[in-house]
Length: 438
Image (cartoon, rainbow, N blue to C red; front, side, top):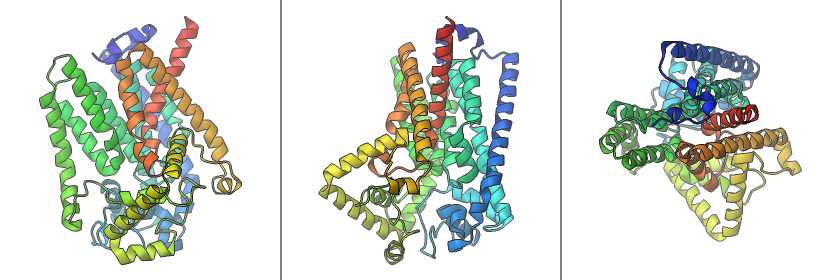
């Protein structure tokens, strides 16, 4: 039974999404205003930040990094290739959706032009603003209309979303939107045996995986949980689940086949895991992502990339990382613990060298820690009300960051699960208000 009909927060029962025409109109108005305000805020911030992307140094590297390089190669007829500074051949450094989107804009507006930059940033801002809709809908499904209204507006004004939408040309903002949509669809699967609804979940999962593979750390687990819930209720689950799996495979398979034909080995989505492991597991631990280990900022690494090719370079970096970990198990354990702390609090170090590199970290640690505590408080309250309601959120928080604990974190890595944290934080606040009123 959907959570919105289970009586969570009894003062809210009369506002839970019964599909009346007036309620649908009210929800649509709320969505429109949230999205418009969110979009305006992000575009205003982008208007102040865009000049940094137009720096021509290193052939416009700051414009869009590897995304821009691959997009340019696509426009110039070289295929999905050349993620760095030269013609290094086909690549699986990134998955195809976002570079293809940027390539489409380059094709229409010019490569590395100001007009293309505006279009890309506008698209990113739109993705961030549209996330208000699944955030609102997730909260409505789980906790009711009051929480949904607060969560939607909280996302519209959410600082992380505003900044990364307005200034960060990377798949993150689109992946956040797609993961929140897939999460919403997953929540509805428990009460649905309709194969088309399960297939829709599979489609969202497949497109999200080709945008940012990290989503596959949680979406199969969520699907399995919904299958288990239906199995417990003795209602059909196998055939709907099979429909979802087949759709995911159909969407991902062409990219996987292309990678096999190009690299002669199985690369389901991305092929740079060994390199990511190397970036976070080496002799430097003063920073969560110490400079000097990426081919884009180290001449020796770039020469090695050119000599070995992408696949050979990634394999060599993976070997070096595993050798380091085997020789320093205690340091690896400590680094993993530090990465865990960083993901949830934003704290890595307050040493002078680190703060020179990350001067805004003290303020970010305060905000990130408070945001996490609010989300976990909402998770705890939802668990007390109904453990089955809390489990999907808990699964996301348990499984999503594991790969970053083991490799290395970035400041943008947690962003795709921020919508779920915002929903739970909004629920913690509305539950507290209701408790005070009672």
